[in-house]
Image 1 (cartoon, rainbow, N blue to C red):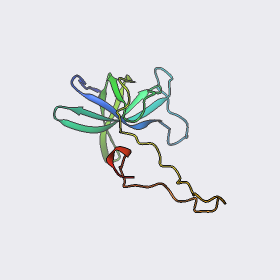
Image 2 (cartoon, rainbow, N blue to C red; image 1 turned 45 degrees about the horizontal axis):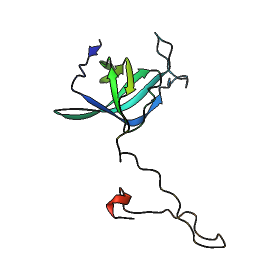
Image 3 (cartoon, rainbow, N blue to C red; image 1 turned 60 degrees about the vertical axis):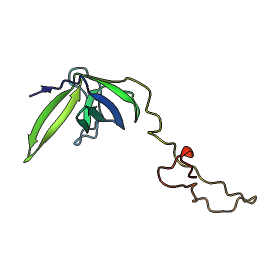
Length: 142
C-alpha cells in the first residue's frame, strides 16, 4: 500500500549526499522497473511548523543535489513494510530537485596540513591545523 504524503507546508533540506542503491545479492545498482533509471537514496530533513524529522527517500535518477541544499520533493509516498518480524516505513518520491543554493555555513571545507616552516622540509607531516571543533574564522578561534 502506498500512502501519499501532502508536502505542502514542508521544507526539505539534503542532509547526506545521494547514494546509488545497490542490490545486496548481486552488488549491482538497483533500477526503477518503470523507467529503467538507477535508484538513488537521499537523506532529507523534513521541517514543518510542528518540528523536523530525518528521512531517507528513494528516487529514480540522480537527484544531483548537495548536502545543505534545500530541495523540492514531488510525489512523496510512504510504503509500510514488514519482513521477518521487523517492520518500518520506506519513502519514495517521483522526483527530488534543488530548490535553492546550499545553506551558508552548513558545510565547512576540510582542514589542511599545517606548514612545517622548516627549510629542510623536515617535520611532522601528520600535524593538522586545528582549532576547536566547529570553530570558524568568524568565531575568533583559530
